[in-house]
Image (cartoon, rainbow, N blue to C red; front, side, top):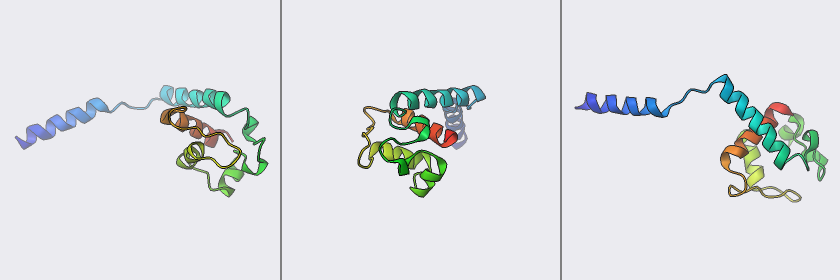
Length: 108
């Protein structure tokens, strides 16, 4: 009986797992770029910052401000400082926020 349960669990996990392909990765990157363009580029053109230039999206600025991971960027989207609009999960779903954060880290 234990072997049957283990087999059933293994098959269930295999059905839930879907491999990531190069096409999936390219689609996510494209989606991140499009979302960034729609939601962020007005205040962050070319990774800059029209409100506070010290808080640009370039690698050195992100590192200096300790916002250099996907999670940290999403955290700033959800709870920004003065001058930045709040992007809560009702306005920007977690999957979109993650795509934008990944785009920022890869691009700037």
